[in-house]
Amino acid sequence: MTASPLSLVCPAGTPAALDAAVEAGADAVYCGFADATNARNFPGLNFSPVEMRAAVARTHKAGRSLYIAINTFPRAGEEAAWHRAVDNAAEAGADAVILADLGLLAYAQATHPSLRLHLSVQAAASTPEAIRYLAQTFGVQRVVLPRVLTLAEVTELTAAVAPVETEVFAFGGMCVMAEGRCQLSSYVTGQSPNTHGVCSPAGAVQFRREPGGDVTARLGNVTIDRHPAGAPAGYPTLCKGRFRANATTGYLFEEPTSLNAADHIPGLIKAGVRALKIEGRQRGRAYVARVVGEFRRAIDAAVAGGFTVPDLASEMEGGRATAGAYDRRWR
Amino acid sequence: MSVERPKLTLGPLHFHWPAARRRDFYARIADEAPVDTVVLGEVVCSKRAPFFDSHIPEVAERLRRAGKEVVLGSLALVMQARERQGVMDLAASEDFLVEANDLTAVAACAGRPHAIGPLVAVYNPSTLELMARQGATRVCLPGELTADAIGALAGAAMATGTQLEVQAFGRLPLAISARCYHARAHGLHKDGCRYVCEKHPDGMDLDTLDGAPFLAVNGVQTLSGSYLDLLGDLHRLRSLGVDRFRLSPQDCDMVAVAETFHAVLDGTLPVTPARDRLRDLCPGRRFSNGFLRGVEGMAYRAAVI
Image 1 (cartoon, chains in turn blue, orange):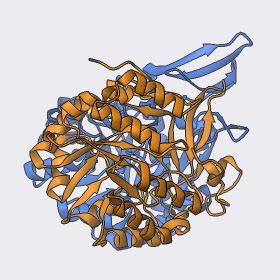
Image 2 (cartoon, chains in turn red, orange):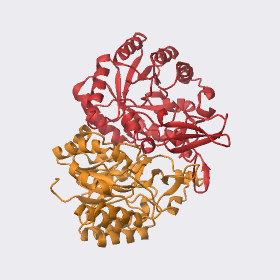
Image 3 (spheres, one colour):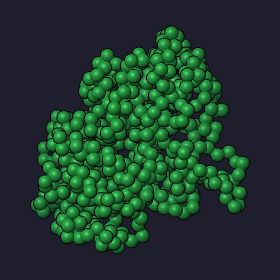
Image 4 (tube, chains in turn purple, cyan):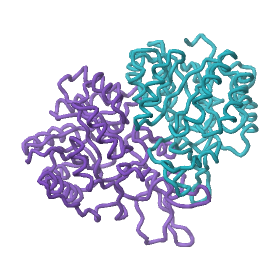
């Protein structure tokens, strides 16, 4: 591995995706346990404690790091499951755990003082004051920044919180609401992303063919979108649906689109950001291999002074991308 | 704590009402509403704050003269330098209890008595105990918690001497964003928003493609389309250990709403006529209570005995 100033942190929902990420040049891979303790709690995804130990061993053998996301909020009365996940992560030899809940941070710090703590985007720490407090109180060493900040704000924040490291999202699915603070999916389905680890869950999605031939996508009892039969339609994530307000109909929150901040790589290096995060633990190994490979090349080229923007159009939702909040106009 | 009469809190006004209307609103609350506590301050969008900030001392004084406790709420999403400074200034307030609505304010208030607002993630006893150790004397819980979770949190609240508050009326704050959806729906950006959110004093209705009411947009905030109504659950929540109930201001007769909740808590008005009265006070509005029952928040289900 090159000693890149910008660590590439990549998703793995399965052992196969993990191997693909390592092979494609990930500096670190992040995974979760197969339960509600992580924010991608999808059927058939994630790792058992036994699989996690093997994943850590393989990742370390390749000279890379493995982080474990335990980034949902422990449900009252069921905190033992989240404590066990932290214990299992420490036992597996994870290089860091990615946590959001303040009570869980306190538990990890008290129980496993040598375990490195990263703050999840779900914790919504958006200012130097919040980040310094979390570093002082719990020993948090890295913060994944909320996807609400402009590049200028990321730059300023990174300088202000050093030596606490910052990590930012660079590619993949994008929450348009501040993460960890959104109860929209819960309002419709009864399952909270914050405590069940899944937004717009597949079990609540229905596609209904209308008499006129259109297909209606519904989440719970709510119509999220409607398309002519056969037309390309994305997964009906609540905030990427079409609605009506102010006498207009459209994607009032956000279009079905992916985050792509690849062209900001030189700026993020200059900002002193420590790590770039690729979203997508729910994605297959081919996706992981391609996106990680492109970002590896782009980062290495930027470090060498010959940056060109990678072409990732084929991996974007609806073929569309946005730099999201990094550009002030997005707001 | 649970031997005291349950208290009513009037939560922060989420909407961008003109300053004159806000002053009239709080004057009437001071004179007539049977609430114990009023949360003042702009919690949704820092661009709105200059319109009313200069009136807060006078409004607070009037509320206090009427015997109300005044709490100042902090901004929900803090990003810019002047917003951070605003939180620091608020947290330094010697005169008022401050309600922290994000981790910036939680950090700034640590080590002194303060309240935690419903926009901070307090989902379990460990986190509540931690907040109490850092100086929180009162916690208003996130709206999506179930009755079971509230019960478990009430145990921790009692053990730490923390007052526990639950929203019982009004639109639920469901999400906050860096992006202004009010501006977006008007073809504008947040920077040049022309304060279009002022057009909708109860939030901008957001409907599904079928025309069914769904959510309400309020600038960078997204609220429930329905009003929360926990009238039928007040006594049960009280027995679980909830000390306070929050009424979130809507564009309706909030004095009458407060009187209705007060009367049910006092036992002078049964739940069924109280519910009818609440519906008369909010014509055309739908109600929900699903979160408490562990189902979709937008559902309305009869109280579980």
